[in-house]
Image 1 (tube, helix red, strand yellow):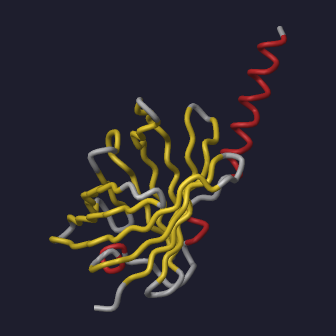
Image 2 (cartoon, rainbow, N blue to C red):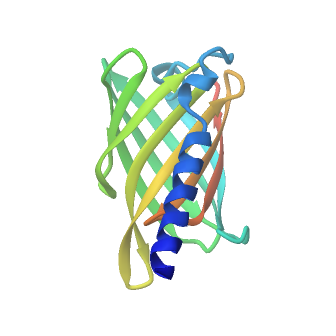
Length: 178
């Protein structure tokens, strides 16, 4: 009986959290309006960090992104350099699927990322395969990006596994002048 009470309480907490979570439509009137194909075109510099669920900064990194579009298909070629000297490359392929929707794939993304633009925001949801020690775990990513002005975008990604908060990634993007 005690286990069922705990499960019911956990389900209620998840339901309440889902009801109060922000939705892209809440940002529909925010300015400047984000044009994904325009902002993610050219070279961007990003600076970020990963904080574990307790708030401790575990990793810091810089990223150079080279972005281009061919019609409704975009390529985001990212080169990461972490504070411990390790390097990583990720190449995203984006597909515009509607006036405010995108899908994206990358070698370490399980399936397809789903994105929606509203006002100054872009929300991505996807599963990322992350190396952790000697193994790889699949982590749910809830990625929110907010355009601040024509050069700067801020990003916060909540990472979870089986509903358990693992931590957050915080990033700032700066678009280089052409």
